[in-house]
Length: 154
Image (cartoon, rainbow, N blue to C red; front, side, top):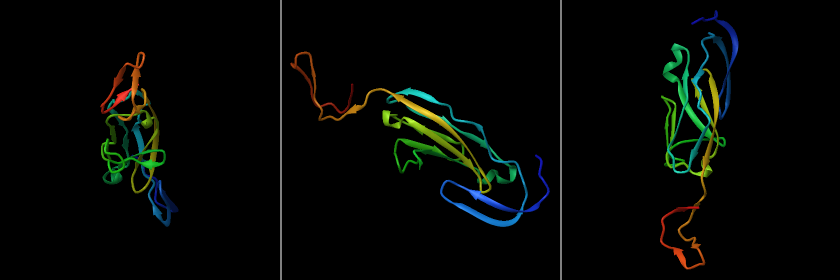
C-alpha cells in the first residue's frame, strides 16, 4: 500500500443521499474498489437470484466497508420486499421467487466513510405475468374451465 504524504486539502464525501464537505488534513489511501462486480443475469420466473458484489479498501477503513444494493434509485431491503435478503458485509443480494417486474438494472455500491465504488448488473426475468385467481381461463370451445387456482402462468 502506498500512502502519499499528508497535505492540506478539501475533502468531500459523496454518497447516494447527500454531499458533505470539510477542511482538514487528508491522507491519501487505497481507494475502495469493487473486486468482484455483479454479472448480468437472465433467469426464468420463480427462480431464486443471487447477485454478488465484493469490494476491498484501505486496511484502516475495512471496519466501515459496506455493500448496498439499489434498483430504480431505491435501496433494496427486506423491509421493502420480503423476498429480498441483502448481506451488507459479504455483498450478496438474494431475491427469491423472481418475477418479470424484477427485471431491471441493479446497482451495487461499496463504500466506507471515505469513498465509494459502484457497479451495475442487468437482471432479466423471463416468463409470463402472473394472473390473479379471479381471472378465468377457458380452454377449447369454452367447455373446460380453470377455477380456484392460487396462481397460474400463461
